[in-house]
Length: 145
Image (tube, rainbow, N blue to C red; front, side, top):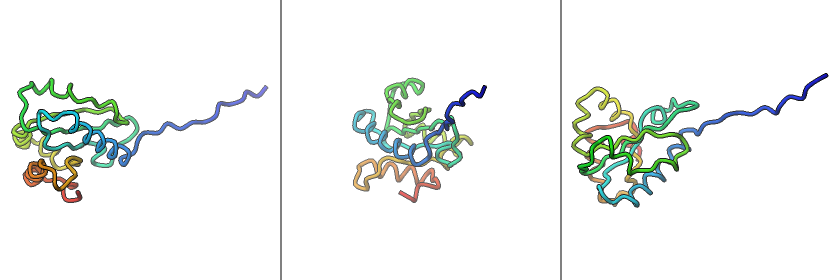
């Protein structure tokens, strides 16, 4: 006797555009909710930045702050990422730490592929700091915004 089969289904994962838009909204909200320490720039790197994301990929987030005495390992706790459509790894560096990390091969690699998403407004007071970061650590996306 034939047994009816279950309807087929497809498992999907958010694409780059969906993640990029969500990260941009998240970044704007982050800056609004957390005026201290002063956020200079927010970006993402890894598979979503390169365009080779796949099912199960996370987004690697980078937040650069002016200064923060909180130990590195504890900084990310203050920033909630549950609103993002994929899991996230969050790295929060002070400006000085971010500049120093560029001396390491892994830091140079991140700097080359990071997609900066905040600030977007040319009139934003943090724009100069972001431009300084871009000039020092250019990425393929730096000139497109």
